[in-house]
Image 1: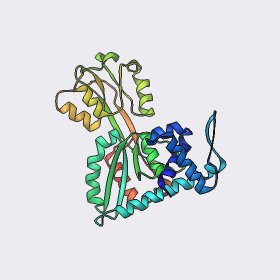
Image 2: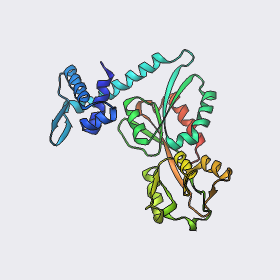
Image 3: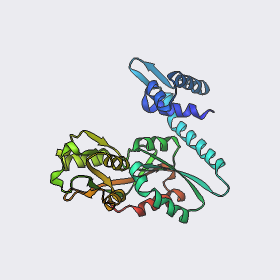
Image 4: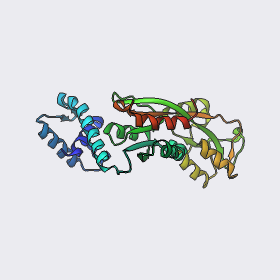
Amino acid sequence: MDIQLLDTFIDLMETKSFNKTADRLGVTQSTVSHRVRSLESLLGKRLFNRSRAGTLPTIAGTRFLDHARTLSQEWREAVRHVETSRAFDKVMRLGLQHDVAGELSGPAVKQMRVKIPQVSVYLQVNHTKEIIRSLLSGELDIGMVFTPQHQPDLHFEPLGSLKYQMVSNHVSAFEHVVAEDYILPNLSPHFNEKHRTDLPKLVDTPLTCGTSSAVENLLGSISATSYVAGFRAEKMIAESQFCLVADAPVFEQPVYAAVHVRNRHVHSHLQIINIFNSLLPGV
């Protein structure tokens, strides 16, 4: 079976839109339609009903979803196993939230090389939504995310948290921070709600940003103030081009490990999760 047929079916079950699935997979709508028809031909069942109201799965389509996910995951696991170098017993594919990657990828990989040298590691940096999708499709083994999105096939485990501090290149006291010169962080629903509650005067801003690396780049070019994650904030302040804004609240962003439920007790997965857990202070 062509694995693309399964991936297209799984994505269409999520979007309920041939157009959206085509955009997300980077193909034409006719390609999506062709793949669905091919899969329906193989199964001998209609999987979707299309009407003016939209695209809805049939009973057969709903029943096939769990099997499709399992087949997709098994296929990718088989491919990874075949491709693995003889020097390694296993390939682990990790999806890291942007700031988690910026803060922890180096120390985590250093520990992995010592504690699990037989494992080859592939790192992918993305946002929570895309990491969750890749876990469900079997493209990733473990995700380190900011927002647990509860799915029947996924297990989320709270680890620790990243600390965010306010830094600036032109003010040193919180009383001087104004919305006009503030970069609003957009990190997760948890962070955004806490920020909106504690700093209501700094919500309506001309610029919003979702990663500490991008904030640092912006602060190197424009006069502004914003929140930056732990080590990066400390590094920026140590370089004396930026200062910590006194009296500004410090925010904690929880980090969660996400794995497929069938892998939640697999030793290699637990080893990697424990490594990241050891690097994060408690919430």
